[in-house]
Length: 268
Image (cartoon, rainbow, N blue to C red):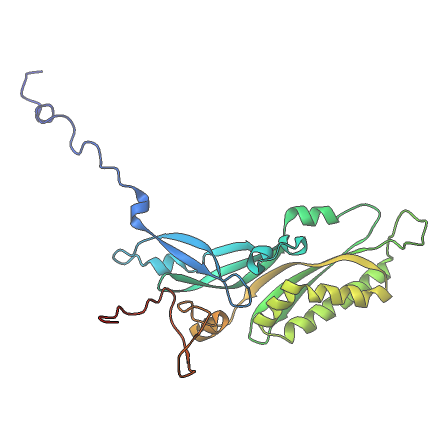
């Protein structure tokens, strides 16, 4: 091959060469994830998203993200009875640098669920679909186990099928009444306190003694049409203001946003 015929060699190789390496995190922004005001911990973490560029809007990529948080972290409680409950929160709106979340479901940890299943007892489970006052269709899973009588010498504590059917029917009735008679905020408070499972255990004692009765899982099947005002009601402060109000010298309550700094005075 004659020298000088290949233009690519004379210019120093192939076109383009090596591309400049750009740090992907330089194109991203951090957003605060906010839980509804039914929980004590409002800020549950931070999330990353690519900065708005052209038609790629950052808020569109944040909406729909699901965050799974332990109830102990949400309520600032070290009680082991709360640590095995996981609440799922879904991002529904973005305001400033705050991602406003709503309830999306509840579940028990795998280790807790497996530790309850043992031999020589009957597992009773009920699955109920019910709608809240504000239009959320939920599927609720309840679980319970027969308890051994302390005075009995028997190794097993199996319930008869007729008793299992009666207990399952009572479970379904109690869950339907509790869900259909409350809105989403009241229902989440009941799930956090586990009051529904306690009522089931107390009422079903007449049929057969139970223990380890829990609302095992809650799924949100359908939601009403999205309303920003209702979401801001759940957050109480719109996600952009602090939860603590400031009282002026005249006694009026003044709401101030997070990170508020008083203006600099020219003279003292």
